[in-house]
Length: 182
Image (tube, rainbow, N blue to C red):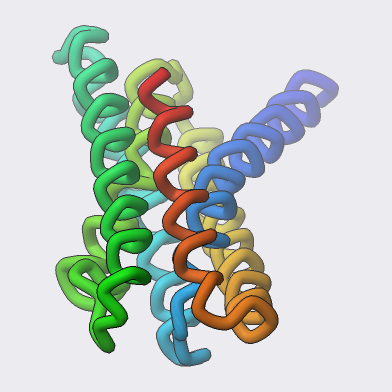
């Protein structure tokens, strides 16, 4: 019984840590002008990706080597840097529509980039049975809730900072991308 309680606590801590990536990036994205319906959808999509990616990682973990993990981390870092740079560049252009908004393909790319670390966790974890299902559900739940919180905080900050909020949001995304790369 003690082992299972410790296992549950470690999975919850891991889910929180994975969700914090989505939280950090969500702060930057939330500084764009985003409606509440969009915030709800973004959180759900991020949560779903945080469930799909470790599941794929678990399935492919025995087949693929650790080289894939390095490529996935590199891709996530470069993508976050690109989105952050685009947001900062967007501020100076004063366009109404961002090049990569969190809608459609942009939303998929956002959710994919913040969930790549959970793919790596799936590759490296040797979870089995019920713990696997529990872990995947916790990854999705924590990342969804933390993304919603971050987007709402970013939305509030956008109203306080005005035009400079997108510049700040882009800088946060760019810095987080550099952090992932280095």
